[in-house]
Each structure stands twice: as structure tokens, then as C-alpha cells.
Length: 260
Ligand SMILES: NC(=O)c1ccc[n+]([C@@H]2O[C@H](COP(=O)([O-])OP(=O)(O)OC[C@H]3O[C@@H](n4cnc5c(N)ncnc54)[C@H](OP(=O)(O)O)[C@@H]3O)[C@@H](O)[C@H]2O)c1
Image (tube, rainbow, N blue to C red; front, side, top):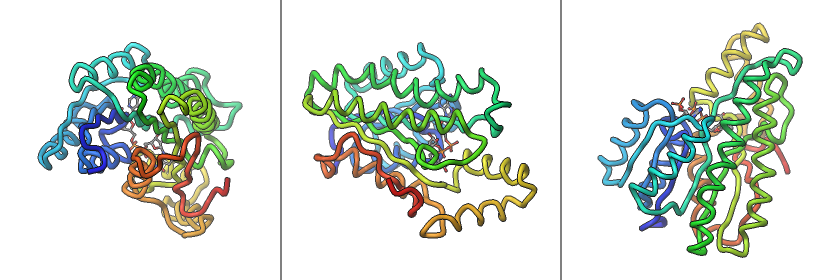
């Protein structure tokens, strides 16, 4: 088992990509600390993991709230005594509107949930990782950080900001035994965020959701979306010793959409 005796804190793990990462890491022996806002989804994920023999705990928290970020890390320590792996995954897309119509409060919230929470949680876990001389942080960014899709300025800015944070944290941590990387998924069409965004875009473009999706997927080399499990497998690689010489990088899991 790749993660035997390790503890993984995974945000946004009640559903979607975070849930897939939590299940896979648990199957590799990690104790899993789940967090998101919806407690029912967290308990469902936790039940599935524990029924498969995994060690798991969960708390409901809002990543936009600094006190909640502190509570997440404090609870993870209280429950498991350490955090070896932090996966910053939780978040939402935000309004689908042009820059001139984007409400400032919504812009601030998208940045807070994705970028500021990744910063806050990293700030809270790095000291113990440095003290042990080991640890991994993985930031789930997006193809949106590297492409130009209209009507998602805060999301793209937050995701691009996460790549900057990844590189700087990696530079600071590299000689202290800690690696920091990012994944940029393309469209993971099975998740709630992706479905809601697709429906909104279809409505704005005056096409059916199926037509909107087909048009987007056609721009990708493989001509299909990615699954949450495919993203989870990349996460497993980047959080395990198999990627011991990789840090400060962003890996595209997008079927061939971005090429840097
Ligand atoms: N699906 C895609 O196509 C795609 C592509 C590239 C990147 N991503 C990224 O992948 C990550 C996971 O997205 P997903 O597609 O799996 O979407 P999802 O199914 O909607 O899952 C998002 C998760 O984040 C949690 N979350 C959202 N806002 C939160 C907040 N303020 N505080 C705490 N938790 C919060 C959600 O739970 P609650 O709502 O209960 O809080 C949920 O567990 C996101 O960072 C997303 O940007 C997704």
C-alpha cells in the first residue's frame, strides 16, 4: 500500500473529484480526513470508505472562512495526530458572466474558496511537514488556468493563482522534504460543477446541453471528457513516492487540450 500510516486531508471530498481521490487514497492505506459544507455527502463518502476497511473522519466547513480552515486542520490533528498529504480540491465555478457584470462579492468568494483556502491550509500544514522533513501538497487547478474560456474570470484567476502558489510553495519547500504540485483537469463531465456549468453555458449560447458539451469535447485531442477516477489516479502518482523528483509542476489531465 502506497500510503500506509499516512494521513491525507482532502477538501471538497463529499462528491466528485475529491470523493474519487479520497476513495483511491483510502484503498492505498491512507487515513482520510474529509471536508466540505454538505454533511450528508461527507457521511456518505465516509461510510463507503469505512465499509471498505478505511480509516476516515469528516467535518463540515466552509473554505471561504478563515476560522473554518483553522478548524479543519485542528480537527484533523485531533483525530489523526498528523497530516502527510494535503489536497486542495474544494470549490465552485461562480457566476457565468462577463467581467463587466461580475459581482465583486462573488469574485472575492471564488478567489477565497479556491486560492485563499489553498494558501491558508498550506500555511497551516507546512510547519509540521517541515518538522518531519516530509509531506506533499497537491492543488487541483484547472484547464481554465491555461486556456481562455469567456464568463469565468474569477475561476480562471483563482486557478491560475493556484499555479503561482504551487511554484512558490514548491521553491520554499523543496529542500525541506516537501513537494508541491498541481493538476489541471479538463472537463470532468460527471460532476455537479461540470453539469451545472454546461447547462448554464448551453442556455447562454442557445443550444442544448448535449450540443454544448459535444462542441467543447470536440476541441480536445481525445474527443472526450475526463473521469474523476482518471484525475484521482494522477493525484495518487503526484502524492506518492513514485513522483519523488517532481515538484512545482502542473500536470494536465485533459485528454490533450493545453500543451504547457
Ligand atoms: N469538473 C470539472 O470539469 C473540473 C475541471 C477542472 C477542475 N475542476 C476542479 O475540481 C475540483 C472539484 O470539482 P468537482 O468537479 O468535483 O465539483 P463538485 O462535484 O461540485 O465538487 C466540489 C466539492 O467542493 C466542495 N465545496 C464547494 N464549495 C465549497 C466551500 N465553500 N467550502 C467547502 N467545500 C466546498 C463541494 O461540497 P459542498 O458544496 O458541500 O461544500 C464538493 O464536495 C474543483 O476545485 C474544481 O474547480 C473540476
